[in-house]
Length: 305
Ligand code: SF4
Image 1 (cartoon, protein in one colour):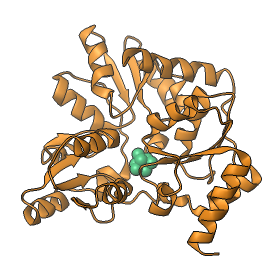
Image 2: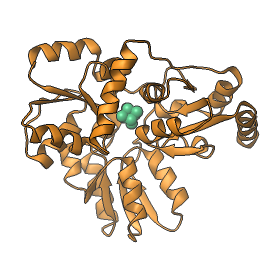
Image 3: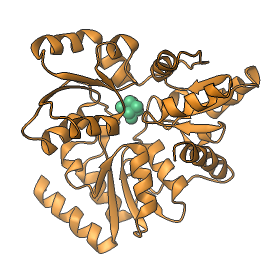
Image 4: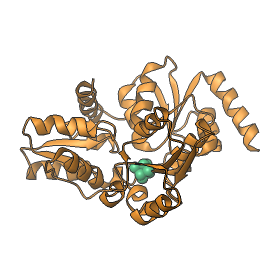
């Protein structure tokens, strides 16, 4: 079956099942093309709460579907590929967090949204790349000791921006930390000297130093939307660049070659069709983990109102 036939089949099934398709910015272009909403993990989890449709296909990785489930427990959230995980999220386990809490009983524990629900249940509050500085800054102002997990680069960025010390975690996203390098960004800057460099804070400090703007994917989209700059070097996973090319055909976007998240690309049109046809794979979070993780997510919402 070709791509067009598959897309038609998905759209037909979506209508028949009254489903909503949420798609992360890092997904394949053909998956982005069938999205009801495209966005980052928090934006999509919020979208899930706002719809009256009770069946949602979440095209992303496991922790994202869990977050949507936590915020919309009454809805059926499907992850087309059950094995689509996030290696960054895997850098922290609930056991590791419990051990760290024993070592630092005075600290407030802040987890990146890229963590499992079981890890979120062990921390005080969650944050995203968009609101990390605000959340960490809030507790820093209170004079609290802060433990931030699991992304060491985002922690280093917050330390530098806020002028504070954080107890950090040895975790990283292999796409932003290893596949993206300062050398590759320098080569792009050399070839496109007028381009504005916008980089994701999961990239290492030597990469962020080369950027004019450091922000998550939602911030990158806003930066492009609110600027007349026609050339951009976009330092993140290539899926966002596919989106930018599509939405701004008259501007030029240069990405880092091979900055591809293999986990994000596991979702295909076939897996989405199968998810809709067979109602698979439903993501659930058991109690009491769900209630505790929801509390940490809700605390983030309160602090960012
Ligand atoms: S790009 Fe990095 S943080 Fe995002 S899902 Fe892939 S491994 Fe995880």
